[in-house]
Length: 376
Image 1 (cartoon, rainbow, N blue to C red):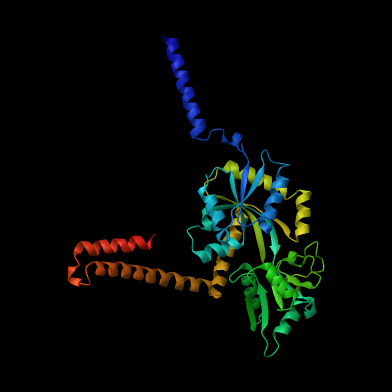
Image 2: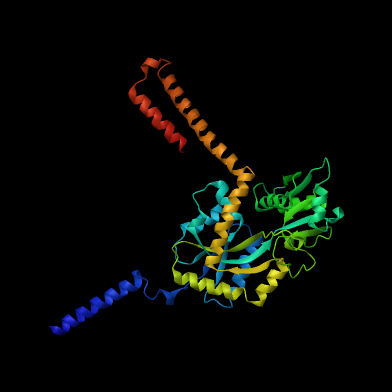
């Protein structure tokens, strides 16, 4: 009889132990990772963030127990990828590749996705903004650019991809820093189109990144917005060297959705720290004309908070936020009014154009139909 009680007690203890293991995450640190980790990228294969993510995945094989697999989830300037990560389990197996362009995307689109939904665990590279010109213009310094802008009856044209894009905001920041006013921004929709326009000498300045000049002997970089010169471009000066304290870059890194176990964050961060010290990674950065710039969770998060405030300021200055508010406050009202008019006109026809035939039930039904059609 006593032995039966001992056996029963042992079974209960074993059962509770199993429950603790499964539901209280006991021993979790020993089991992560147990399968491949996905890196979700918002752009098509071959883009800068895609190339970086694939290079990380390739080098990480040397140090990780599991593979890192890149998945491309394109659409809505990154919102599709961000939402995909938020919809996934917070188990550490879905990582988001992030870029500075996400700041503008979230602010301008006013989507339900917020940067606060994510935990930014590591910044990997700093791709400095660059002012690029056709060599026929003979712009060898920022002072040459300022003198050119000072000509009478002349508008200095700056170009790049997008209105409200990072490059557009960089242009605005330059005009403010260099104190030049007679400028104009022209959106060429894509980087390659803008570069072709610059090669045809259709503008004074193209705002882009150092890699944009690779293989284009007719183009030259006036200056890069970084603290130091790039190793592969030793002759290209910085803003700081020319008397302007300006540091502006397109960073690229990784984030998790909030709620991911600390064990997963520690593991992946540890792998990324090993990646940035790898000789293959250093070669990749030099070949891509970017700085290897690892920042951990705290430092990366501070950067994003500061740059979100700055992005909001320049987007507002560019009129991007005002335009959105005007559009979003007018259009829904107009649409709902038209739907309501259409519904009640049909009821009017049903009642043979006799307003006295309307009753309370019809009015309520008409209102419900109008609201239903509006939210379809």
